[in-house]
Length: 370
View (cartoon, one colour):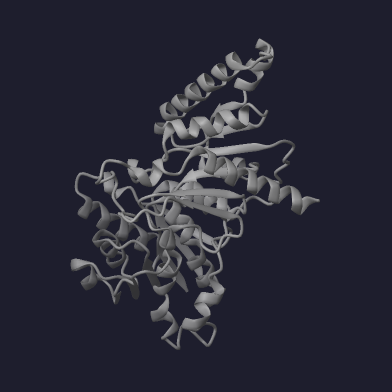
């Protein structure tokens, strides 16, 4: 049996799609699995030995996306032959077109405009449920088909088996945590409304660097200037603190502390990012893909939520996740830019609140070790 999955386009959604793949492995242990997604998403599954093949979907950048999508679907069909089941985790016409072009026998996805005519099973999108369960719901046509589901799963057992996203790290990577490292992720691809204030991140970084803790800032290449701005603001805070102290810190000590501020934006592949995150003591992030990676790797994670709905997109059933939200009446607005301009959903979460959450996570680790 050959099964094709069109994965989501966003990194965090890619992490949240991993339980669906695990469920499919449970249903079809001898099947061959093929993935279609943008290159960054495919990188999450580099070390998954159960994946037979992967196809990069870069059709969004094509001048004629319709033609490019059709050609990609035909290429997939030519490469792997007859496909038994194809499932799209993206609610988009072009994903439905892709599945249709592959000539897969069963094509499952959510209803969306003309896309429903291209699918054999077009489901109504589920509302007010977590994204992980929304993806899992797409498997219900298979559960209802006795030729595919021989009593292995039921609709009720989906909730039991979908526990949390599990990523595949190399077995030879064992993070040696020789000292405290705080990771910060100030960017968010969706829009500025999801971003915690840079000056707040700077205050947090300065606090921990002043106590000798290494602080790494992560993000994509485009986030590098933002990270540099945060570092400069943190350095200014540290310099001012030194000037106001009765016993001033000598220059060598000050320089060594400044070296604890490290910009890692755009300097890691997805696999390298996963490896580095596994070394962290705590990870602090906006609602982002990196937040989901950290949480899936069981790293204590502080998620700062403003315009997005935590009940739908917070790390799923994460054991070491702390949610910080201002709980405003206008949230979640799900807008890319604050429609009310004030951006209080982020401004009202003070640096001290984040620092306290980090300290709580650190203290919990110490108590568990002792």
